[in-house]
Length: 136
Image (cartoon, rainbow, N blue to C red; front, side, top):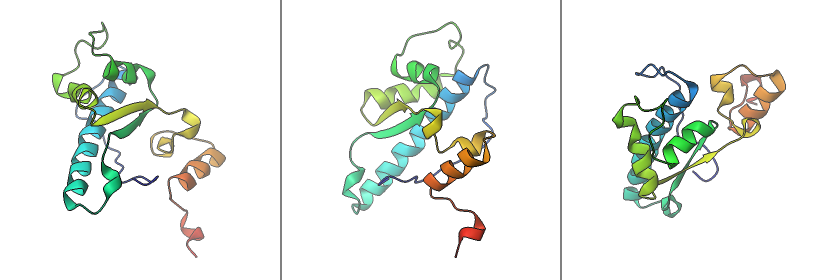
């Protein structure tokens, strides 16, 4: 919100995914549900007028984005549990938008994969996190 993260979470998924596309699709679905809940909560408080409109969910997996935007059955995704398809409904209702984010701009990467020190520090700085020695 206002250019910064509101919440982030790293956890083991409840479902075993058969592919990275499926794992990212499941994560996008969970993120979408959380984002809509937060938007409604903040909206009910009535103190942040910029909370109206669709929330953008960023995903770095084009297959997961296609699966969310184009609801058709694919051979590799036909076994995905229906509960994760809520992301399609939220997109159709205009509550969220899902967009691709290139790896070089994905500030969540330090939480999910190994990066060079320079790239790690770059992303951590862009996400608002700092090393403890920099707390002066």
